Length: 307
Image (cartoon, rainbow, N blue to C red; front, side):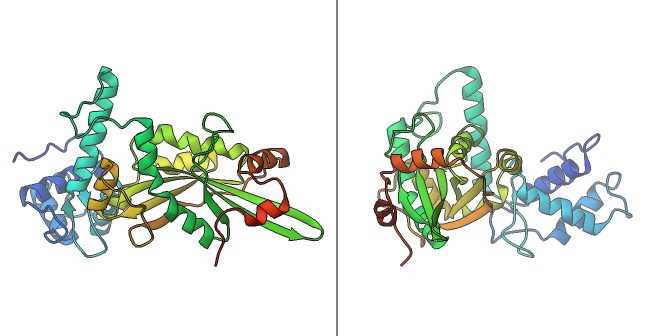
């Protein structure tokens, strides 16, 4: 392997490229076969003395190295403090898939089965895969104190007006009723998340809290794109990651699972909490009407409740 050229690059990029080189050179490609941060620090300093002189701080190096694990464009991964660093094949597959989708989009050619697995799913097939995630999200909402239900089959609120899962929290006190509505838009992966996240944003017109949820392999759960924080803060939505074993994630993404997932299969991680927003009552009423909730009796009978 050829040593990387580190001149005229930022310190972070120098550390990322140098560590990637050593991990690939030494075939550190699994969580059971790693280099420690101290190993990498020593190799980088001895091999690139011009970029990393004796005065270069070890703690600074460690901080940059840990940042590579969070970088969605980095192959470097680590499953926990002091567990060592390695090149993640899951991260590599994710990056290659993203690059292929971008290349295909720019060329205007559809992705064929021979290029990358099955052809892009038709909307109905995609919806069927997402449905497998809904029971876990319902249970999560119920645990947060909401009545919850899969509402993905509704179509009365128009384009991007129907969330996948909804929750209602009702407070009947002081001779008045107030309700809080929460919605979740779920996807089976982070593919094209910059586009799909706006489905969750669109629900803020009637939901007090809106979430964008996505399935993700647990091995690289730390590589959630940093830009997602910007979107969440800018548009006032929450983000939920549904972490699962890599093989199960691949089967879900490929449409090979037939049974709904449950809490034994998935860890629900609230990456960013959805801030509460005031919504005009008329829009809350319109959404509740679309859910089939038109009176108090229907409200208290609606959805799953905490047992």
